[in-house]
Length: 441
Ligand code: PFF
Image 1 (cartoon, rainbow, N blue to C red):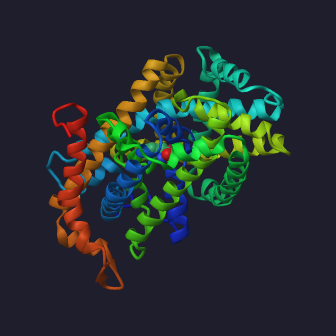
Image 2: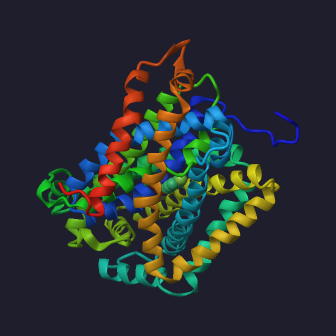
Image 3: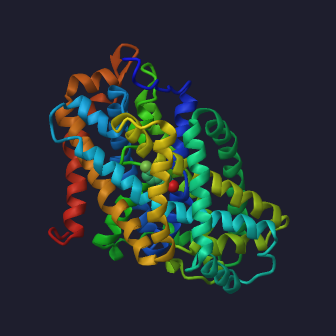
């Protein structure tokens, strides 16, 4: 490395890697997006298709991203430039940076709502409010006013401060403490939710699939959600992969991260859907679903006030560990490719993304467009090209080298190659073609 290049960080342990990767993966995608999509797409059938995609496609794509990152020791664009010089592959890097812009724009708006909810919960605003009244609060808090813009900007500023200072110390330590706490609160919520009258309908909705109602859009949404939830297809995991030590097992890191993320999504589903049915709310309520349901559950609990405050604080923190990874993709690109100073890069990125964020905050169609286009098109496309790149361009020897454990290729190496060469690209392509109506099944 020439001394002109900036010094690259390395994660200190396996736990550090998984904490950071799971910190990126676990976020509003699990607690906000997963429940509302499951509700809109008919429940169990969506859940099962989603689980299938996580295992069959998510894990191999995550592993491919880790390989690209660790092998290249560069940002997502620079990675392709280094690994396939003079080719057109770096375009995937540009797509990734574009996807990070779009996702962070609407994601920071929802993150802003969590701040709004902390303030409301701390002021005991939700006490004794009915579901309808909470819904009115949600509509006002997220409606077209200065409030969502203000909170979105506040959230972006916090993200930028942390990214500017470097991720390792503050956020990773906080993450390791907060994640287990969030987990415990979700378990408590599940207990309460299951005890409500009519809860069993929610369980049926979540676990008893009716595949006859599945449409092309259901499958595409499940695919998009698998990528979104695992932070795949835009270089976040490749970026984190570039910080993974040479002697760590990439396969284990990918499996642990994917399992933690998926397990968490299912737990949140278990907390939400029994209450949805008990409160008589439509599961297809849309993006407001969890923001109406959770305060309602807290209202019915002893100590609900404290649980609510802690819950929304933790929700904001899990959102933060994800916004950090999104901003990091853009910042590292600016630093390594455009040779900006880290501080300048951070503010330029945060500033321009905030401008898009304002658009998302005031216009729900733009919000919806960014949300579905990035997840359902850009991420699967990025993932598709990533596995093709690793499978066909990077070559077996490089892959084998990266997957070596104790001097031998890991046991999954043999299946990994055909999966990323054939199965994963085919599966993603089929889902795409089906959703645009070119292929019917
Ligand atoms: N995986 C995050 C979540 O589920 O909330 C969202 C996300 C983060 C998507 C980072 C993409 C990404 F690169």
